[in-house]
Image (cartoon, rainbow, N blue to C red; front, side):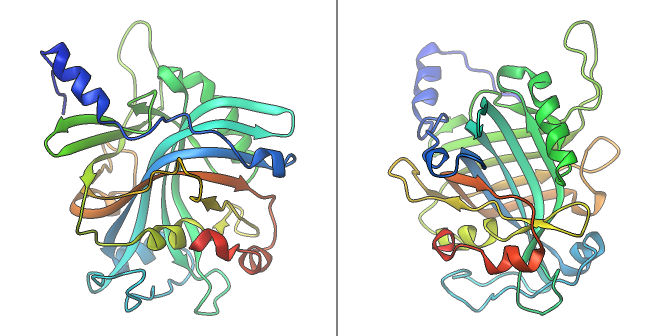
Length: 306
């Protein structure tokens, strides 16, 4: 859906509604000079998907999340469903030793509480899809990072983001409402004609005083170790939201997931998820080296879960 703005004054009003600067500073690089670090200004949403559907997409058993824990699920969770997390945001000041990328856009769809260790209690993330894109429509900027990430064990696809220079964009003022859209780039053609860019997902959201979840919910799900695509190793990518510029906001909104033939995600996930719970914040991220999944779980930093 496209929105036309006729008034320059109204455009200025909408621009003023964006919360925070997408270019949040990287404060962890100085302490982790050999590891990948960045500041990620993003929005995460939790989607309730039928458990049988989720299980058909994940080659590991699923752990039933602690739905009775009111600090995580204060309003419970729809019966016979399992959470799927979608996220989209702006990565700024990406560093790893002497290597540095000024900024990229990133998005992901993954399943938390995958029971890789088959112990019934240790949750891991299983990635459905990961995306990365260049800022200001320069998708080519993402080709090398996507290749490096894929070779490193995390399959990443190049994507086109809207907005392409921010974590999200304002679309209405009363209430303040924002949007983000992700398309997978299969055949780019910025010069002369049509491109093949199937939709992945759209977010449309606003802040809420009656959230479905807490900040701790998202910190817990976001910070589970990720199972790498070789199925043999895992990786910790903890996010910390304790800086003064984190500006956390609990959200409510709609998420549209697109499947074939016109979409990029599995058809089993396709649909419009209305009135779901989300979270926007700027988090400091550290990407650790690959390690055994048991080690990754044991080394999960409890401070990141708070």
